[in-house]
Image (tube, rainbow over all chains, first blue to last red; front, side):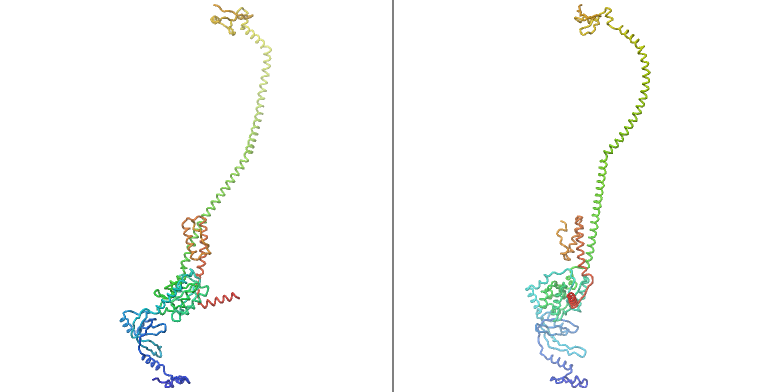
Length: 466
Length: 85
């Protein structure tokens, strides 16, 4: 039986008075009421409940979880020692998402001035009933989305290798935010990061995540969106299996990278998204396709290599230009030399003629001088000779006039002494043959039939006889 | 066949394609098979591609800018309002 608060009117007259004109009884002290409430709840008949085990949490003295189905949920609690006995009896450990049957009754912790009250279903026994209905429902939804082709839409989108703006949907205070930021920084990426904070755990998270995704996708500058959340139980991640969220993501034109939970966790968002990642590092690598720091180093190295090749090529080109210049110079010099030579040759005949003319003139002058000298000399000699001749002539004239007639007469006389005529005149005859040749021997005369005999006054023919 | 045959224009290349083309160019140059004229053409093309890649990297390499979605929306609305006036 509750005592009305009027008994405490001395302490707080305003509170003790209650609400004027209220038809309800009271006010009663809350401690008394809560104690009566616990008593009443504990008097409820004990029953067995069937539901999905979610949010399982093992504390030092108690084990807590929720039992859910599509119609509602009940928080459950069990003493740690009873929990372990149940596990020992069943031979298996219930986990998140399992369909379980629990036996027990309602309980209520009334709290105190320093502690909060709480309702729970006090579990006295537990049995695993089979695969969780939530998981089965998720699986059905996955198959339905697959059948509609919605699991492929995001995967067909082209993702920029180097996005300038990245949108991120995550909890504002979660560790995933820091992890993702660190991973992007390690990647050397320093673009624009747009945070769309949203609750990522409770039952109301899905619509807010969906709205944040839609808002980010509506901004043209956002090239890729990451949905990030750390690990958790299946119940924690159930919001990422929301049908509306998944259908929305499937229809977005911006690629969505899911980084929800750990490697073993698989939500529907992982199936719908363009890429499913298990860690923030993986998500950063998926969002930024290249390691920017390494790419910058590689670019610098490539630029150096190109510069080296360019330097070598330009050096070769320079040498070629130098050779061409030298060849051109050689050619020019050769042409000039040839031209000079031709000019020289063209001038050569006249020069030669000039030289020859000079030479001839010189020779002519020399000849003339020589002639003059010779003429003078010869004239002198001739004069001398003329003088001599004149002298000799004078002498000869004297000779001719006086001596030569005498000599001529003597010679005539000498010659006449040898004249055969004179011999013939003295009575001799000259015997000759028919040819007129002298016959000087008798033997010659015997061999002739006839011969001629020349006398001083004439010739007669004579016959030879013995 | 020389490596430059069929080379697409730099403006058409994505970062990945441009970076790949630069690697291809360097391999060709390192092979020593390129003629002088081809070498000079490849070097010119490679430098142009590297500049393109560098521009893209510079856009995400200056300083990380963190914005909340509301801040970005407000900024974009302000820019749109300024442009409309």
